[in-house]
Amino acid sequence: MKNRLKVLRAERGWSQAELATRLEVSRQTVNAIETGKYDPSLPLAFKIADTFEAKIEELFEPESELVR
Amino acid sequence: MNDATEDSAIRPGFWQCLKNSAGMTERDRRNHARFVRWGLAWIAALSLATFFLAHQSIPGTATGWIVASIPAVCMAGMMYRFIEFLRNADELVRNIQLESMAVGFAAAFAVGIGYAVFERAGAPRLEIIDIFQVLVLGYTVGTVVASWRYR
Image 1 (cartoon, rainbow over the protein chains, first blue to last red):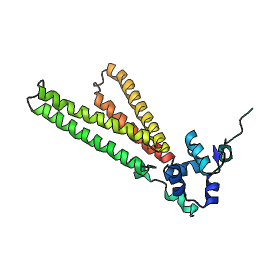
Image 2: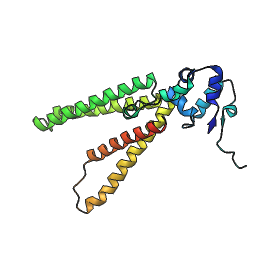
Image 3: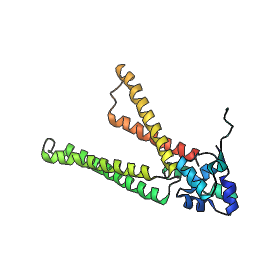
Image 4: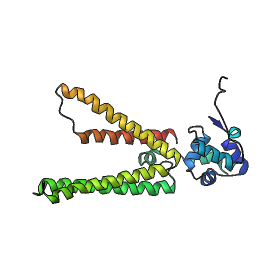
């Protein structure tokens, strides 16, 4: 899963620690999500979207488009 | 913001992975410390109970049963604290723990079942504590590998 977390975080000038505090997770979790090593749970994805005041689909997208 | 250094700066090293503390929040560390304390109490109680039951003439008496039940109480406390830790853990930490436990159980199951065939061929009987050691070893290796993968 690709995401725009790092870009949006940079736009707001937040550090990973600051975002982690806002999301109530560890810095390693934020780092793992940003680097694409870990896909967050649905509740956390909603929380991230809420924090950035964006929709989930604006933050996350699948690696490849699903065959419809 | 120093993004270039930030990502690598928080990467846990090998010892942090081995210590099972990679990615833990303060709450996780606190809950994990409680679990570890109960674990140490269990080891101490088990050692003392084993010593007393082997060296004192109390097996079969009420005192013997009380002494033997103390490690079980500590084990119940340890299990409660681990479940508490897991339920309240950061979701990445929980993921690492579940992967580690899966590796531990798979290793213990594989060795337990696999060795049973060797026992039928005449190999010495394997005690349940030996299987437990394999489980702990598998869990530890799983923790290091999973923590390393998500670092």
